[in-house]
Length: 115
Length: 114
Image 1 (cartoon, chains in turn green, purple):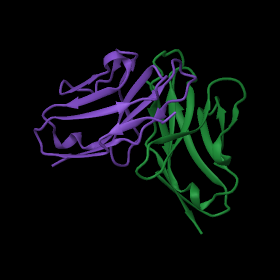
Image 2 (cartoon, rainbow over the protein chains, first blue to last red; image 1 turned 180 degrees about the horizontal axis):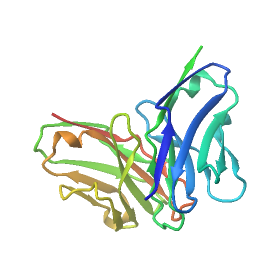
Image 3 (tube, rainbow over the protein chains, first blue to last red; image 1 turned 180 degrees about the vertical axis):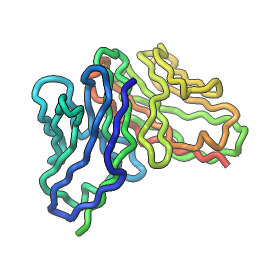
Image 4 (tube, chains in turn blue, red; image 1 turned 90 degrees about the vertical axis):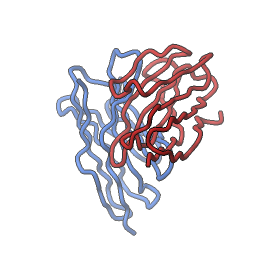
């Protein structure tokens, strides 16, 4: 069965500092990979996704993530944090070949940005 | 494109009561998903529809839970005989067919069972 592990339930960075949110997955074959962001009292918004092709993917708001098959990882980064980046971030996978496309989420990482 | 809408946004009910939530997907999306999110956790898949057909259900979806999507448009999720453990955020998402397509999430319905 597939699973997703996000290392660190809470990450705190200073404004302007590098953001690194870690995600590792477990799957018999490389899945499709996603990062979502959730602001308080709102639904989830897709930041970026990896399905095929280039392993470094760029998303919205300056975020990017790199798929590393050998490490079964899909870590999310942003060079310089803004106060507006404070939110909950979820890594998710979808089974390749599963035509339903259901998402399996990690437990989330809350990002705090200090002024 | 008005986005995915969910009603109500909040529901407080007493244990043992039945509740029903509604989800209106983006109009051209033929897939609709329900997820449940408890405090401090990521969303968990409950079920999904392609058009009006319910194609997959999680084991999390006990007999007290039922979902419908008549005519392949809006969907309802009903919980019968609610329990305190049902307290959670219920999220709806919609997409076009195919895993390459993004799932767009609604704002959720927060259920509190007292």
